[in-house]
Image (cartoon, rainbow, N blue to C red; front, side, top):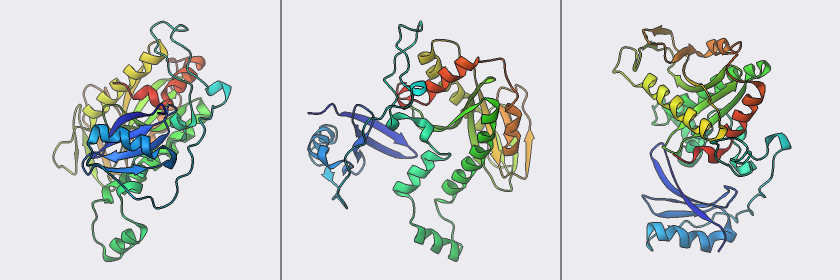
Length: 305
């Protein structure tokens, strides 16, 4: 058998098992609830089905192919400056990562990458969306499209910071579920950015909770702190030196934003205010920025808890 591995994947209510090649290329996946297997690369059908049935049982069924699958892409190497993360012997306490392949390169993710994937798999067709708009009917997907628009708008603002020596990644998946909307890496350190799109809303933000239009508290700030702590643990594990990571909450399209915080443990901005991060410096050297970015863009760095 080929060196195929079965990897669990949970996000936005989906519970799947993916069968991957050593370079991370997915050749098949299965929904754990329905036990339906989807083959992405036909040449690995028999092996993938056998592996998945070990987890799902013999009752698992295979979705009929709509068209022949293309062969898997070669595990392309990136430019020498973006190649493998050095071995653990080069830096004390650092864990080794395999050579970065195209399949594992998070730098290829556009803003809203995770939402785009979810919408492509489970979302409505263009015709269904158009029909809902014509009838002015609310849809369960409205919040997903609003979130996607918010991440895209913040992504455009963050991209402007590249002129100041900053690097940005989008849709960084976490092993414990969910993803970090944006990760900003530069001379001022690392910022784990959580985007919230609430068009025309009045937002109140405290040390651990936020309220939208005076509604029930939601744990936006607490969640942002947890994301930053998670990112710091992952990056320091593979970089071998301290990596400062700060949580950031960015609100998009709001009518007003009231910061009622006392601890100031989370940076809170509206979308156009993220430019305030541009002049920050003194936390990471140019070499360290590239090192952290090289680790952060590697999908496999985030797969282990």
